[in-house]
Image 1 (spheres, rainbow, N blue to C red):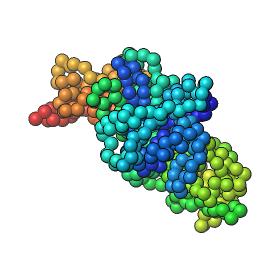
Image 2: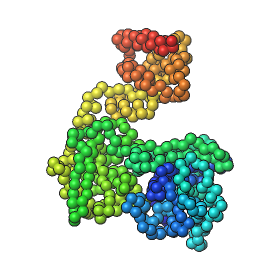
Image 3: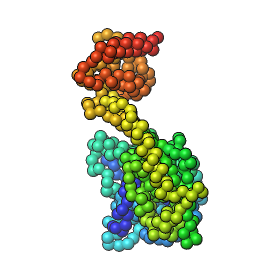
Image 4: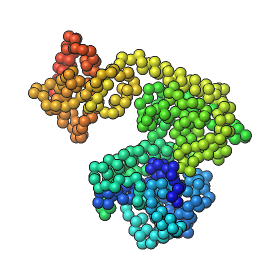
Length: 477
């Protein structure tokens, strides 16, 4: 009981619980952080699936219990619920109701398991009351709550700022992971996953944060003609297909960067029943290389190819067998091309895109006042000069000029009197009005280069001041 689930992270543990909800035909899953007088105390995973019948609840809570899995089920080992929960919490409570059946509940407590292997029976009245609460999920007549208490990673503080920071970081990381792992199911409308925060004893919760799909193969145009391309292999009578993609070079899409360096996400993406098991890695077929960062391959795992590989109990990685390497070596496309040809073409596309990038004029990078997305885009598209970044900020002016240039402070100043007018009903902040700021930056960045302003630069600044001030005055009419 103490040992199972040790390889889980918070994100993979939640993914395992969502697997169970999807297997139960849930259309909605809510992951709720619960606070008690400011301190995080519990986590709930609530779904509107078909629930667990009273005569099946003991089987569901048996550690290592075996059951028959359907062809579309995501579960496999019989450990997921327990291993995922015990990796994060010392108490696991499951409350469930099947349509037309009474509510049932069971609870495992790790501290009790030290001296006796006993699972608590939760009173029906308590289970019924918990399941009857309105949490905003569409009613189906059934549903399940998985509750974690004594969660090891929760901060032991009531400081609102620290708790808020912790929850924000956890929700962001978990949304990124779940959005990637379940992107196919979310895109098809098969399931909706959301997070919120609830204060114990209160009727209200925070606005839910919905998990958005992150499709690692969602590009608007392919990076090379003829792709994606299927390479097919047959080993020992079993067929395996590899769908090879080449991303367009210099992409700044979230689906390409995947919250990290693109070079870290090249390789094989293994799917089992539309659930992503492993995002990237060449599994011995090729060594990772920056020039292959545009190369990604979809591999579907079904019962016919399970002899080639196996997944770990956390369903976050696969381990390939020697037969998998043989399949990659023998794989051919209809045009006769191989993995070697695919790797060569992916490198050529990357190199061609990199040449176009280096031919562009270097720029001073943007600093404060610009959105992180703009800074990331420019970093990927244009070589940055070694100079202090250009900031763009608001301040009060003595006149009605729209902007001013301060080369000593490396800052473009905007006149504060126009800020509210341009924002309208939107909320202002450090990175507000990104479109206007970006256009001004692109227009004026080069005046910050060099040791001094030439006469042409000075004339351009005066021209821009005259034209933009006239334009922003017109906005007020």
